Length: 185
Image (cartoon, rainbow, N blue to C red):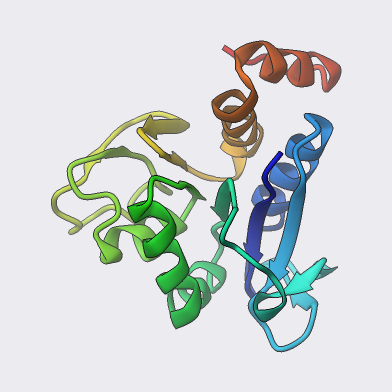
């Protein structure tokens, strides 16, 4: 099974990042947390310090399954400012690779790069204001082709379960959800 990568920048939304890691690993998906900082320590938006599995430069992304962006302020803008990450996202999406972003990241990272153009997507309410060309939805999670977006911290579990469903099927997502005492539609 291909590895998935969850990118962490100072100011990331802890619930979104760590729920995604947890749920995907419960499903048996190999997931690597990646710091875009010079070192592995990353401080979340609410002061939680996480030691990532790796730093950006230490990974081979050529066979990645998912590239996942949690939100958070200033986490999402910090991700958007990382040129090598943005280049990776574009190249991965252009070859049909799977990209997922939640909260501020769909609006702050993906939309400005044109990755949501003419797609259905969601983001943290209000962040979509002034962004043209995206079919913004009123839902916790949106799937459009190889791109999955989530609207915020409350959608962290449904977002992560959707990634599982897109990779391993709905039955596996329901199995993981049941084990966590969650509902998955």
